[in-house]
Image 1 (cartoon, one colour):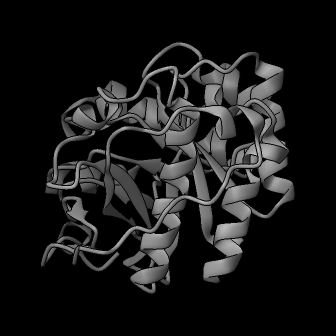
Image 2: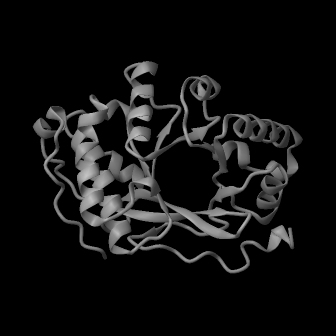
Length: 260
């Protein structure tokens, strides 16, 4: 397993004063593919226990006392792992908006670590879910704008999982939107889902936002997503997350696309 070094001293007062985590964790990586050129566009860093325990197990150890330190540690460990593996793709990192009090201060440790490892800032994509409530919409917008000004990209994750998605898309300027797996499941057999996704493809194209389908598990789901105009995809059909390593794509994963 890749060795994870200590987390740099945080610049945000809340993170600096937080208690130590009291537990250890690492990351698994899952690829995000671009259908148009059949390449790996990015890898998403997903929290896991040192022995491969699930993300749920990890989050059972996160509380109000260590949330800020945990958020910082996630960013640093993801970037360090990507650097150690000499990752040439983008890197998707999840973050919790409520763990960011001051965007410019809380991002400093991430900036310093990325620069120290040489991992390009423009290849880092920070994801937040529409179900996570920040202190206010204005605060979330400040985070997105701050990250953009520093060269990072942002993405709304699990889009469609609740009712706030379109409001967030209207208020913010993310670089990507990741459709929730619920909208993708059995999309090949559901004309309503297909119509919704086609509509979102048109909206995102107009807003110059990339749309991504996550949770693809079958050849038919992949073909249906491609038919709606989706270019970025993620799911077990391509590869399952691999602990501290970049997984190879499943053989024949692009075959459902034919010669398109």
